[in-house]
Length: 150
Image 1: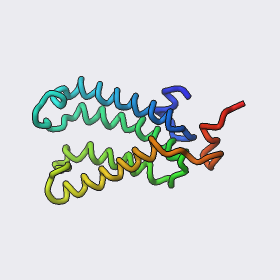
Image 2 (image 1 turned 120 degrees about the vertical axis):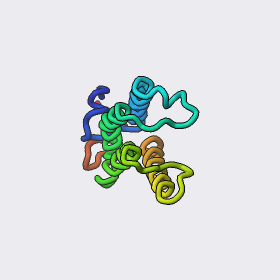
Image 3 (image 1 turned 180 degrees about the vertical axis):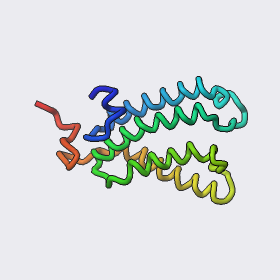
Image 4 (image 1 turned 120 degrees about the horizontal axis):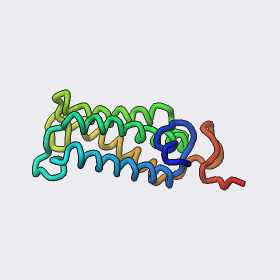
């Protein structure tokens, strides 16, 4: 599977190896963009406020994150709502500082509760995507990516 196809399409199935490849590319783009658009994030002792160019870059990167999550969900034969919910949770986390919402570990009240719920959901999807084998054999999304082709 070509990298562009891996990061921009939502149909079909991918195995764990392709998902990890996509996640590593996503992480490199995420960190690289952050170094260019918000270098203070990596050097400040206290987290700097979110800046709009970095947030826009992070929002653009939701496309490859959504693509690999959707295809991996297809491989696991998840319900269709899980991948969009995962992306929506990440989008909410990006938008929250710009909306004046404080979300994070150690934040009292609703901000801490929302952070805990988001963290548990994201961690669950991450572990499932990265470590659990997909549906064996064909499913409604296509052939098993681990089946050797003749």
